[in-house]
Length: 282
Image 1 (cartoon, one colour):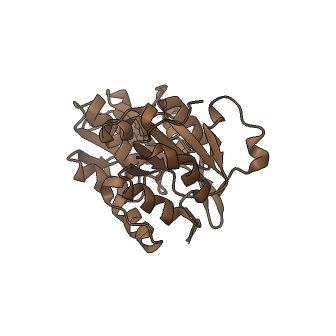
Image 2 (cartoon, helix red, strand yellow):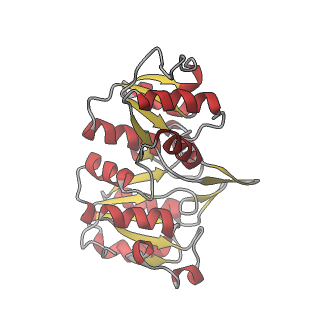
Image 3 (cartoon, one colour):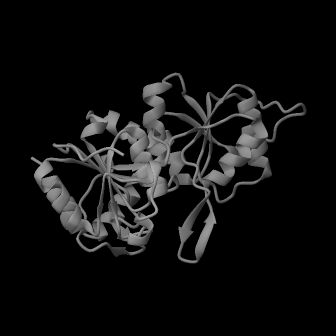
């Protein structure tokens, strides 16, 4: 567990359960964000979702009364892009398993991108007609055996295997559906390769944000509602964290937390978050 910094320079918000719940704003969240903006603190919104472009989140948050920009939105796709740019600059050609939003973000970042859904099945012997520097895996609702075979052959030919996130499932209004982690697990099993995972609870996403903003992790606070994802990821990256009880965790859950799940502080709501940060924001 990392203590709250004396001076907070960056605040990273999770979205669902912290800023909004479904189509409704978490009461006090717009005011908290506006106060941080007005205080000169850098703000980022981080989500493991790899399917939606940043512009979509800007529009959604704007409709909830939260003014932001694409620069403040970090999806698991854009965090992956930032990670590769800083730590694997030789990666230029990528094979992607994911949705259209992922493809557009990769293309906008300058990557030569091909979707696995559009690549021919491997030739006899498992060989592809083309080669890639990396296979990037996100949530792909159309994932099937053909895409698995194409990606497996690309990794066998030397492409590095990178997962935007490893969420086994994700919530919808109708219940849970399989997440990107199920596709990542299939590829790991097929190739025998352990993927690089960027999204929460791995530290890659928070590390990429801290590096891009140009602050230290010890001057950063992550605000999340999920001890297993947001808080564990913050602890792994050296950031402080506030567990807010407006989402998946409640007071009963707090009493059971241990290890990487333990936050620096707990807050009932956004107003309580501000009270914790008031003396730490200049």
